[in-house]
Structure formats: C-alpha cells, structure tokens
Length: 239
Image (tube, rainbow, N blue to C red; front, side, top):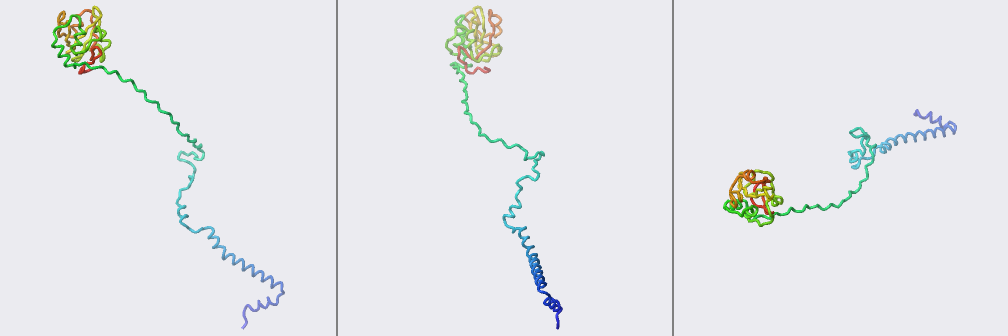
C-alpha cells in the first residue's frame, strides 16, 4: 500500500543535490524559529514580574517620598522655598545678680501702745507750762530727742497731713505759733484731743481739734502721725 508522502519523498530523492541541501536548511531555520517562540513568552513574563516577597508587600504600602504635585496647600512650589537657615547655638548670657533694695529702716516701737497712751493722757491733769512735746511723749513712754513740736512733725513717720480725723492714740501736730515751736497733743478719736495747757496755764484738758487751731495764736493744723521722736506708737489704726 502506497503512502501519500511517498511521491514527494521520491521527488526529493531524485532532485539535484543543491535542492536537497536548500530544503534541509529551510527546515532547520523553521525549527529554530518555532522553538524560540515557545520559550520566549515565559522568560519575558518572569523578567517583567519578579517573584512576590515580603519586602515587595511592605514597599507597596509606603508613603511616597515626595508629594505628587510638589505643591503645598497655599499653592506655592515647595521645591522653590529657600533653604533653612543654619542653626546657631543659643548664646548663653550670664544672668546679672538681682539688685536687692536696701531694707526699710526699722522704726522702734514705743513702750506703750495706743490704748495705754490714751489711758495715760486721760489720767494726767498737770504739765510743765509750754512743754507740750515733753508731756505728749511721756504718755507713750518715749524718750526725748527733738526740741519742739514743729521739728518732731518734720521727722515723724506714718504722717497723714491735714487729716482732721486722727485715730485714738495718734500724735496730733500743729506748726507755727508765736515762737514757731508748734504744738502736739494726743488724739482721743472723734475729733477730740487730750492736750497740755488746754485747760489753762499748765493744765491738761480734753478739747476739740478745731478749738486749738482757732484759739491758739498763729497755730496751723499740720495733721497726725503714728510716731513721736522716731518711735512708733503700736496700735494706731489708719497709719
């Protein structure tokens, strides 16, 4: 039984030698081309898609290093911003020592407080005529220092000039007078004072402040203070 391929085979066998060689070469080239197409597909796919690893999965979720538009919210190009100034270490300046204010001079306290001074003045009925400063300081047990009431007022602490309502126990001052010595008395409160020579020559009495200012020659009301001769009378309120 003859095969359909027998006739072509006989023709090839009967053909000249160069035809056989040419056909063989064509067959080899065709075989190489077909084999190349079969293996090229898988190889290229592997090159384009590398195997998925844990590093590949992590890198897929990382934020991009640079913004997509490189533009901030105000519409300016972030790449056009000037470079930040170099940081310079802060210069340390030595702190100056705090200047302490000198403490205020401590005024010594009188041995008698306001209540005791008033009680002593109320019990006194006689004074050395013309010695108002001596009589007033003795009611608070304060030692001598100044020669007259005007000078004592000028150096008094806790002064309240021209205040017509001195508290109980305060020293009440006038300046002027016939000799410029002024006058001093002890306040009883409510506009009243206990004063030397107020009841007559050498007589202690209780009188209104306005009476001494009106009746005594050339006396001018100065005010009141919580001290006599540099000693503060404890318990004088409002000073």
